[in-house]
Length: 404
Ligand code: FAD
Image (cartoon, rainbow, N blue to C red):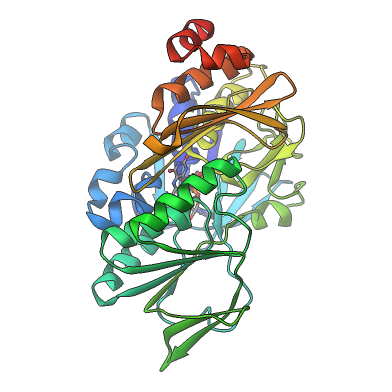
C-alpha cells in the first residue's frame, strides 16, 4: 500500500502527519526525526523556557495523538540519503524504507560565522531543545552575556538574559536591529526600549574575534576595537536551510528546496514544507524562504491537501510574533516591497502599529502591543482590502468593520 514518509518532525512535519490523517490519507505515515524529544514548540526556547524550564509543557501534541492516528514516530533516527529511482530512503543505522510520497520538513540550522573562537566552550547557538538545555545548564555560572546578531532570536535572548539578571550586551553589524523584518521606526522603538531596560546594544559593529582562555570563552573583540567580557556568547546571525538531502538527490535547491504552490519539489511525489523551502510568494511575486510557525503549519496543512489531490495553490497570509521584554511584536504580511507607511497609536505608550503600503496597496502591518490591530491586519490582507490613511485615522472599530 501507500506510505508517506515525513523527514523532520518540527512544527511542519508534526502538523503534516496529523493533517494527512485528518484529510483522509489511508496509507502508512512515518514521521522521522533525529532529535529524541517528542515534537515540541520552538518559540518558547528563547522566551519563557530559559527562565522557567518546563520542557514537558512544550510538546506540540501528546504521544497518544500519534498513536491514535496510526502515525509511526521514529525519534532519534537520522535520514542519510533519499533515493528517487526506487523510492527508498536510507537511515544512519543502515535501515532502508520504501515510500510512495516523501515530505521533506528538515528545517534550518544556525549559521556559524567563520571566525576564530567559535568553537570555544560557552559559545552557543539556539535552534533546538538540546541547545536550550545546554544554555540553561550553563546559566548559573554566567554573568556576562554577549549576543551577536540583532534578529528576533538575538533580541529575545537578550531580554531573557536580562530577566535572569545577566549583564547583557548585543552587537549587530547592520545599522538597526530586526532590519530584515520590521519598519525602521519599529526597530528604533525596540532599540530604545531595550536599552532603557538595560541591554547594551551596539549597531553597526562587527564581531572580529572571540577570545578564550583554557578552551573557555573570555571576551569578544569587535572590528572597531571594542572589547566585551563574556562568559557566554550567543551567535544569532541567522539560519541556513537543511537542504543537503534534497540537493544530493538532485532536487532543485535555491536558498531552500524549491517548491510550487502545491509544495511539490522538482521531483515527482517529493514535497517540502517549512523553514527548508523557498517558493514564489503570492503576495510579493518572487521567491522567498520564511521562518515562522505560521509558514510551517499552514504549508503542512496544505501539503496534506495537495497529496490528497486538492488543487488550490498556497496563498496564506504570512504572520509572525516575537516577545521581547514588555513588547509583544506581531507582523502580518510581508513588507519587502513597501514604499510608505502610516502609523497608528502612540510609540510613547509602547502600543502602536505601522501599516505598510506599496502604492495604495496594504502589504504588511507591524504591531507592538496591539493584538487587535494584528488580527484586523490579517483579515484585511486575506481579503485583499487596503484601508486609506483616513480609514486608519478613524480608528480600530472602523478598520474592524472594513475587514468584516
Ligand atoms: P524545524 O522546527 O527546524 O524542524 C526540523 C526538524 O527536522 C528538526 O528537528 C531537525 O533536527 C530535523 N531534521 C533535519 N534533518 C533531518 C534528517 N536528515 N533526518 C531526521 N531529522 C532531520 N517562529 C514564530 O512564528 N514565532 C516565534 O516567536 C518564533 N520563535 C523562535 C524561537 C527560536 C529559538 C527558534 C529556533 C525559532 C523560532 N521561530 C519562531 C521559528 C519557528 O520555530 C520555525 O519557523 C519552525 O520551527 C520551523 O518548523 P520546521 O518544522 O520547518 O523546522
